[in-house]
Image 1 (cartoon, rainbow, N blue to C red):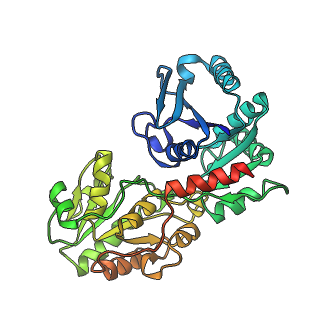
Image 2: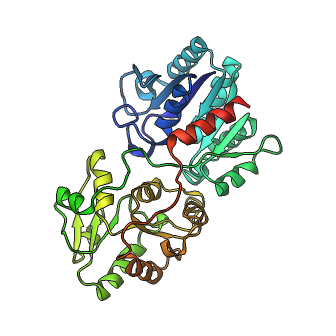
Image 3: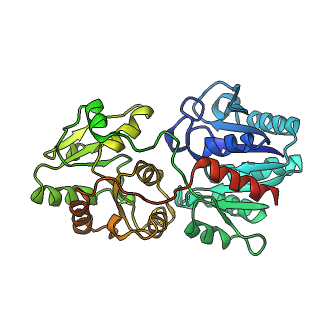
Length: 355
């Protein structure tokens, strides 16, 4: 088969050309490894130059709407797609690319697939025309895939019959494997003996991260030696708390090292239009490293953890998060059982496209 992926270049603020990762990178690679001819069209809006490259058996192109303008951008994408002659066009990464993939598929007489890893309608909720275009793409698609059953059920409501939405779960990238904890702490200059709790990710009230401060205070009241290790850019009031270690932004290669240095990794989501359909990559990564997690028990997270009670805390409840954290600090490594890999997920996707 000839498969054309259409995606934003910077999903989750990470450049797929310079820092390839996740389903946006590994699904095309997996299909290419199966012998399919695969191309990826990436789109950005940062004033970047167009480029083309071949990597791991996949042809990648990137174009920028600010550089080319809307009309020329659409013409360029259509011309590239027509020259390729895809059997399938796959839209992924957000609602815009459901619309764009539908447009390209119609112009190339290709079948349409739409992949969703989040509830895209939770973003820019005021943009009703975009959400209507997304729903039309979901309804028109020959194949719709979702990162988990809760999101699949939501998308199925837009299908109005036809083929059921398929589940294509999240997975951890290959570098996330168990490593020696002492060596990882030494590599990052972290305390060798202190109980370390960690959080990596954005801080936003609609994601429930505000409860972590209260949770940490409760943990410290009973375990004064506990430390909270943060990467990225946490709010100033977080940095003022005693025992907080701020590492700033880490290189991609250091993220598995950080996870493996922890006693407990926090994965915090909220009961919102976003959180009810969120399948956190950070949870996949911690599980792949065998690190004990404390995660807020939204339905997607419960599904990912197979209802493992020792890892689940009540949503929005700092006391529950603290209690579960204290109980898990001395667990050591956890065997989460068989976990999906991107190779397996990619093979499943290839099977879905072949039906």
